[in-house]
Length: 509
Image 1 (cartoon, rainbow, N blue to C red):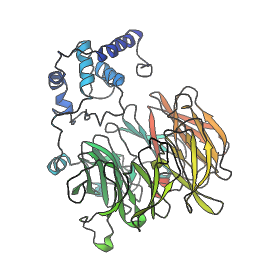
Image 2: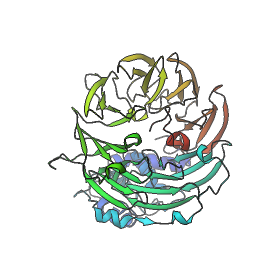
Image 3: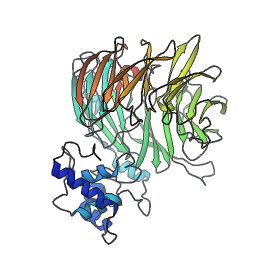
Image 4: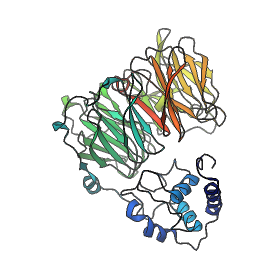
């Protein structure tokens, strides 16, 4: 609660604390649904699926804590169309609304192909815009920074470390932006289903479409011609062309259509000319080809049957294997596996206990083999695995569980955070990739320090101070000295264009 009310006056802070107490015992006699229809539906939709404002569904609000929801309803959101209701509604009415938006909608809202088609909007014709950057900087060393605090995106010059441009984004971008092969266009996905195509060179939105009501992430094909969205709600993957015109909706079901599933993630496997899809509730891994040599019509899904579903995954450098995390075992046994995409079967279990976040895993060359390492959401250690034998090489102690891990071909260090730890969230640990030993730490005392990304040449490492009054902190990647910092509003992620489109071994793909 203390973080939620930072920056408010003492009176306002005590008002919110009182509201939080009221929220726990909101009177049952209040009709929160009627309050919503009167005050909120015009922006958030009668079924809470979003219009001008974001969707207010339990799935979409997973990362918004109830005290923060109270704050937003009470005080509004600066620089947005969300007004303050402190003078319109009573404290118990605000508390009732804040509770009600976390309850499921009955009947469950639907989002059909007709809704997708109706949501599509084209705002600019990219073919009529200049085919070169309108700004003076290296377009391959550009950083795209997602600022979750006030829902904006900043573009930062990776040579001078200066902001080039800043623009508003959809609510709660998630899953990391994806780039076209030339680095000109970037696609953003939001938790409430919106996909935005943005022209980085001309600093303008090209098109938008809403793929679903609750979306996990998007993927862009290696040739830049296709975009695929992974949905929690409805249970589907949705395919678009590069202009976000709907091509096909594929229900996430078993072959007989009797069982459906949320979609955990979709990623591009460029060397295979295909998308790989993980299902959260069905033990299958899908491969959907876009190979022009086979005249892909997206009619056939290549299904690999598994023992249990995958929550997230990443690839080996050859894109022959998927390394996926399953749900944590109650007995503490390993919860990750290796799936051979060519053989269409699981070939090994990864000896990683806890809750590995393999979507942020990285690989590097070590002693004649290739190793992988992944942050762990529920463990104070990093496990390093030999990718030939799939055996454990080393367990490296870190201060606490983390979410992100990054490196670069030209860096001797792998950087990992401990942002899931209440006591070590302010610490980044550097691991020597040759000795597999932790050798240094950088700290931001009392703050959350996370998500490293490197410049194109690996000379500098950029970290996020993950706070509303946060910053990008630029470190010399060799000396570890701070070079500069740029104020940012909770920079939840930053993405170097070159590292992403070149599929750097030190970044997630």
